[in-house]
Image (cartoon, rainbow, N blue to C red; front, side):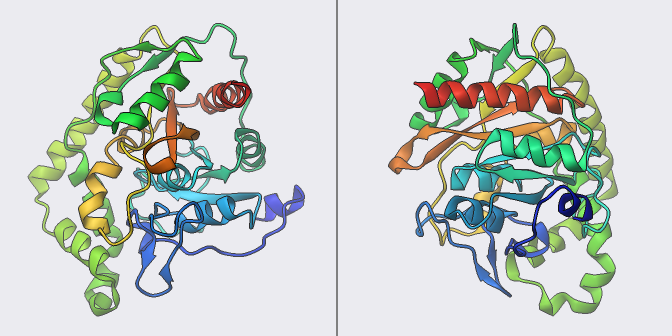
Length: 317
């Protein structure tokens, strides 16, 4: 925060979020539920849901969030703003309470790609890249609801994206759970009664994961990195839906929503790749759809440049 203040940013407050950043609804049992300014009957996403809501409401210009499986990108998608999960390790996570360290990232959220890029430039070294001749691939739209799919495919067409068969990961969940269990084991043993129900249930499941399952999951994660690099051969960026749907209604609950909502954001977290969530017009129920732009590790400047070009093209239509 010191670097941001020295660059001219002013801290206006701390936003609410999902407990321990381990959830996607931002319904916090200790501090209350974050309300989505786009529609109070819809979740704002999580875990950085307070950031998404504050930006959508116009209460701040930029925000710093954390993302371990989609916690920047899901609020950006639900609230119709922009969010970047940087390459893993690009932004130091010093002072951030961990969730799953080899998945955890810190990144910018804003109402435009340019504002995200400006914030990231203060906290990490990034170089903007030219987008002339960019080769874009498109995948996973078949997993999205009809209007989300249509909006993402229309956005991808503006970049001349080519549909490809890009793999989704196998079961990387146990690797994530093992790290979350290690972070919380001692704290949970002493204060289990203070945890909210959904986080408590996820941690109890994490404590029960076998060593064999964790080892297999870690091996799958490494293998997925190789498969993903091979699948992106010949392309510079990959476009996908950020979420399969628009922001779901409140009241369904984190445990029921989690697996589907993170299904298209978790891959970039498993890979450690940069991934940008960008709104791309209204979809089901008039709520914003979001396109995700991914690239190889270290290509954060390219992702931002492509995002800014696509943002401009969407606004010019």
